[in-house]
Image (tube, rainbow, N blue to C red):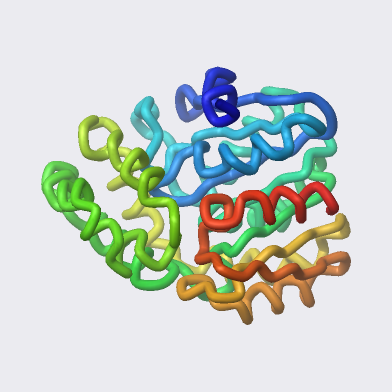
Length: 283
């Protein structure tokens, strides 16, 4: 029932790249929660259910391959471009002093915004995410970026395999990203499997990612200038995002601290949502 309540709060906002869907749940200090590649905002549903009694939780579905509304022709779908789109989202909704959290590639977007010194971000939470030279991350990321070389129709044919649970559970797909979240991963596949415009957006995104693989290395050189508190939450058994990177990030940031989560892969919001919600609440 809580998850349904989260989904009933879906709204839209017109930004320069196109229409962005988001949910806006609860009241109180503002949390903005970002997802990764081939995911949507529902990644955070169970975390939001645990926090929305005391916080305003704003969760956009960014154009990262599981969005349901195609972007405009010519929209910048590089990851730095999507980070700028996220900053535009914060401006458009006039969200101030936010706690900005990101998991997987969503954490990369948070780092880009931290490095750029966005004045709307009061705190940050980095949850098992791309960092330093780990992009594209693991077998999953490398395989996905390679498929972006295909024309959009062939990319769509290749992705049809993701209808099969056995394929989704492979290490080159979502198998090393989540222990328990296969129902969510199946749902995230629907737009790219059924909507040509989403396949086109995703191919543009993946080609832009292949063309610039060092953006996080450049951003990491500026993270030490982020003077706000940062919580780094890492899965101790992560096989895609090296746990060493969590320790490095926490040590690099002037006000960073590390919390490790057991019995989880990268997608902690799916595998350990109650534990993650408590860590964010305490932070």
